Length: 278
Image 1 (cartoon, rainbow, N blue to C red):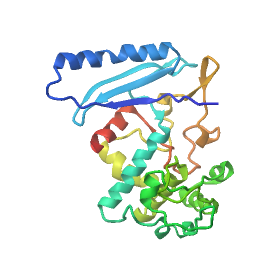
Image 2: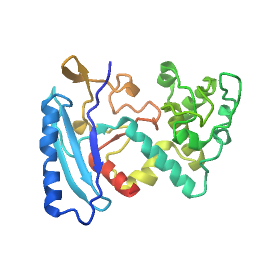
Image 3: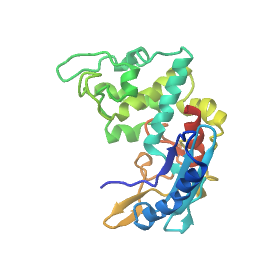
Image 4: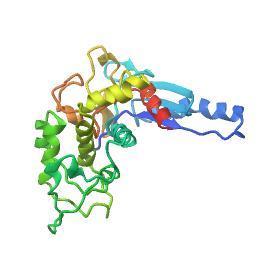
C-alpha cells in the first residue's frame, strides 16, 4: 500500500531583477488557493508551503489539518516526519567534514568501516566503494532486513550488517536508490567526528542555524505540534505509522538515528537549512 505523507513543501525561487514586484506578489498570493484545492481534493490533509530566497522568506502558509481525527489545525511550526528529506542533511554533514580536510569523497568506505571491505558483486569481485558512490546512490549496496533494522539501537550496530549483502552491480556503473549507503555515511560521520551522529548534527548544523525543532527524537513538549502521517485507503486518507518506529510514538528513543530518513523538522527549520546551502 502506498503511503502518502503529509509533506513540508519547500520551494526556493530566484527572481531576476526584471521580474516586477506586482507580478511577484500576484504569483505568491495564488499559492494558498492552489494548496486549498489540493487539500479539498483530498490529496493531503494539510500542508505548509514556503517560498524563499537565500536572504528572505517571501511567503509561508499553513493550511488544513495536522491531525484530522482530533481536529488539530496545521501551523507553520507544525512538526513533520521529513523522511528522506533527512538525506540532504546527512550529505551536508559529510561535506562539512570534507571541507575541513577530515575525509575525501574518494576515500574507500573500508578505510572507516573495515567490515565492509569484503563486499562482493554477484561474480565474486570486490570493487572499491567510495563515499562518493554512497552520496550518489551508485554503490550497489544491498539493504538490511526488517529484522536487522528493528534490532539495531545504534548505527554502529546496524551498518556492519551490510557486509553480508551482495552488491547489485559494479559501483559507479548504475544508479539505484540506496538506504544502506546513506546509513553508512551517517556511521562514517560518527567515526570521523568522534561523536554520535545526532550530536554532530545538533552541534554543527541545527544549533548554529537555530533549527530548534529538528531532531530524531521528539520531546513531550513538541508532541502537540506533531503532524500525523497519512496514507490512502480507497478514497480516504487515514493515519499511517512511521515504519522506523515500529508502532512506538515519536518520543521513543531506543532506536538508532536513521541518517537516511529518521528526522523530524518544521518548515521554518528546513528553510534555514536550504538558505544556508544557497
